[in-house]
Image: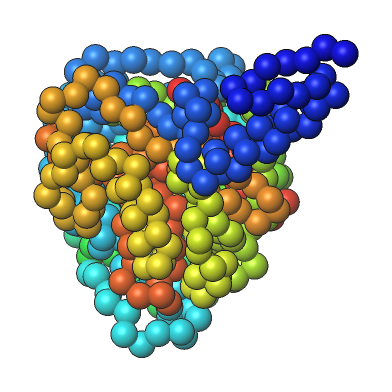
Length: 487
């Protein structure tokens, strides 16, 4: 019988299988406890070139995910791909201003949800068509912009799109109150043959309350809307009907929108807002006969990249989309709720009780920049992330971001992969573009933050959504994700 010599050990061939099984079992157990092979490490970490974390002055346009017959690109408002960035309404915000406004938006959302649920009294209040979305910096109404046509003849307008808002509006002549500076000329309803006002004391006028949360108004028998946002921005004007053109083939008559006569706040550059919420006045509901309340988007990886916004399933929809049911906790709101069940860092599932996520629930929001987590969940994420990044020099905190690093002496860095788990057994790997927020090469931070209170709703923000194809299926009651949507 053949034998095999091991150091200080003589065993027969019949024993080899048994020994190998023991060695394999030991290796798996040892790896589970935290030691990983070089191959495993590639699966659990991202290797990122530091230069890629900084903004570029060159536009890197992509056609991935676009339907050539019905697509327009999404671009970052302040990036080199955007005409708005070059235009007269240029208004680049600092990182401090962006995060300050983001905090105001979050408090506004949480106050709205707290009022709906009556759960808290101490909430802090602070005043088949693809479209191009351009990133803007507007609290209360979202961060990305699409170009649509309004009126007859068609007038092209850049509108911010927001999954947390319902009513669509644009600034209108004669600007009886005030109109801020925008890139395009202001919409003139008197120049359109398809414009008409909505009358007071009608069912359509009464429907405004659920979309705006404000009392109805009238002026000379014309219905007046009033929408206010978390940073004290607002738009007030006539509630009206008009022809909306999304593409050369997708045109909607009698689209209900706000014709703003008094508009003030942080909407510089854009002509108004496109509401993608769940109310019956939001665009998904008004176009439901054609699009079945389905839309999707892919937010660009950076200010120098492009993405898309698509209504309907679209021929470019990814077959790898994984869906999670919309949370029932938010079915009576305009928000799209998610049921988060867990988080992993570097392949290790964090020890977070599921009740931490269910206490206040979570929503996905296209306008919130930084994802907000329950305090206990964020503490666990931060602790594990810091342990994995212990080899890098720390930098001081920045605004709401308290885990920052100085990468000046590095050409590339290795960061742990982060995954979110949702109901239905869905695991979503956060793209590497969604893990860090860059202020400068000497201050690059973990792009997550903690809520102030356990009763504050968690928010899955747009930084973590970058390059993902995010599919909203309102009729089906679900939200889906696929990686590499527009990378």
